[in-house]
Image (cartoon, rainbow, N blue to C red; front, side):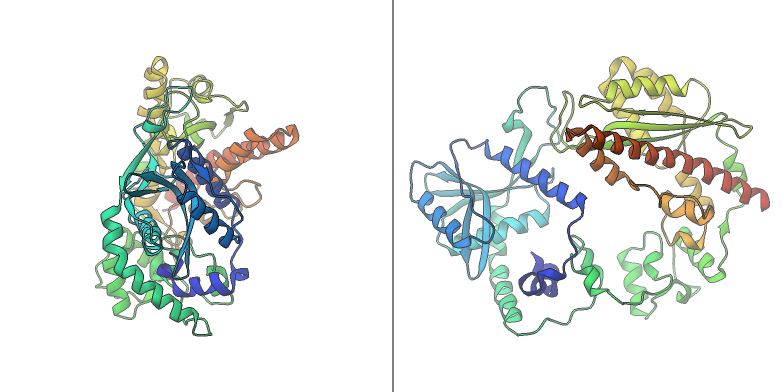
Length: 484
């Protein structure tokens, strides 16, 4: 898999793994979640035997797998180990059947037909077939997004669904055989391959050696990839013309309206402002309620009525701004290890009241409100009324203002510092939503009261800054509109 992304990545994995950037806390949390899902999935095939051993104990794992394969009383093998032509794999679940084995790869996802996952299965299938194992069926086991958790023990047959990949595996075998031979030739060459950085560094995932490969590299100012939603066709056309920076894009080159104004702002060095900005900023009704939710998306639904990967809001911040500029702040953070939806929704309804627009940045808050209304039918009327009062600041910025320092991004974390230089999240212990969700989950699992208290304080600081950012951004836009 590494070699298909970049042969230099494979070379580094084999010979220079110390050059990799250490995994982040978020990545480690994803790995831990995947492990938990894999262990739960094994219970669909009870009576199986786990092949243990450390990652480097390959010979022992292969020998143990062989003994289990030869034992007809073993109905399934977990983490079975095989090697063929120097490629070593561990199969999540190997299930005995009448005329061979079924092979199952478990993924912490809901997309059984994702090509990346099927390729993972195909590599394992190629190894097992090469090792002499008769594989009847190979598939990807994922979580079923339609499963609604009723409470109690999970129904493992309903929680998971299997996507068949047998035909894909068979069709990919010849290509994999050739690639393995090619990779061996590269690894035997005695020196790393010469590969430049590029889009492949981030597809399908960011390469752990990107930091090493770009160390000391000078990056272009305003590269064409800073154009908003630059598609492959336009990028290819610009690259064919030898255009690398936005300033060098010919005036007659076809761009979207937003891309054209980005080009204009970069060339002039001045912000672009729509003549309609002032009018649009007068649309929301006072008082303005600046709202932000924080949520985490547990892969395994923890509370009745939830589905895999449902967003579970655990916190909100609300800055209420009056027409005279005065501010009041309200917040809620669910500190108990219990379902936060009802107490959060009740606190929100109490804090917002019945008058004034609710300012948000993106459609996320609308999604959360509709989900809460679905899950809490007795509160749905009030929650849907809040959704009707939402006023989204993101499309206002995207359609009516652009600053060269946005660098092609309309994320509020890019937009606010460009307009209010001293504002932002740089001094906070938690600085983004993913970190907030992870910190919350870890705090709930911690038995240390001091850790919980410190984390909850950091979460309040972060969420408060998110809504204060909208207040500051809206004020900055009003100032620029008034100045013309």
